[in-house]
Image 1: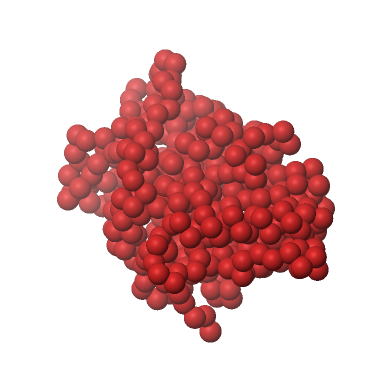
Image 2: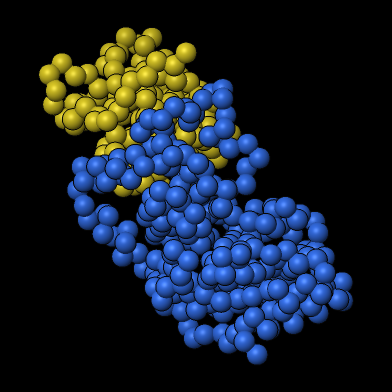
Length: 142
Length: 285
């Protein structure tokens, strides 16, 4: 591990469950590592694999996709579609040389503030054990 | 009658009777070695049609330009699966397409103005010689097809993650992003490709490894569960990037996870178009 390297995580949180869960963590004063940069999406089904691949291209050490538990999707079935796509994307990224652990998918409900904190903490710890992304370049977009 | 004669006779009959307006097939290219696509509109021109082991193009792509018009197409087993894919995705109407299926001996490499004996790599790995569906068949249907195998993908998977990363870095570094892979692919028909979007700029126009990386990754992923393995992308790649290794990995994954192979029929919904509530996919568990 490089000295002083802090993993950077891009977190795609669904508006209805996980984003609210992160909010609960905040209002309950539950701490979680600041390594995550949260992007609110309407549904985990909105998370186009392109967004994840783009995050990795731009140098993210890890990507977290969090949505409602199966069966609880606000749009009935968005997370089921997300699950299928991510189930294929993860081994594919691994095939390209991006460790399986770098893409994490979790179901976090609107009341699970503590669980959200645990997820981000354990994910950050997991990423600390890996080398910083090699060959990834940080770009400044205009 | 050999394959060429059968195709010529059938094309002539179809055009004379007015069953179709156009027959898409192959003719000899001007170099006298390769084949090239031919669109026959007049029965008198049907004689130009040929079929042999140089007819490597997947002509299904051209059906996209003939939506709603009665068209016959000369199709090998992989091409027929591409037609199925397009029907499944509502790009082509089944009753407007007349499939002249050809029992495929496998296509050979043509290099430096010569036809070699060597089968193309995709054909060497291919176990399908009889089209899954056809309106008219050229050749004798073969026996039961053997199971699909992925020895090439397994070899890649056996490498360490660093080795794979280095391998793809090297391969993608050659990419000149000419997008020939996309143009040749029957599954790539978006009127506006993500690579052409300027805002957001998903794929930058500068020459940089990371831009080629995102292009090749997403091109392959957009065909996850859709690629029918005709290997046109690799055939047309001027930089010889082994794109089939990416496509076949995704093919293998969707086969293992969902038991699905694209284009085998035109009805089964694609894996990403459907789901099962109770499935266990090792995601979010």
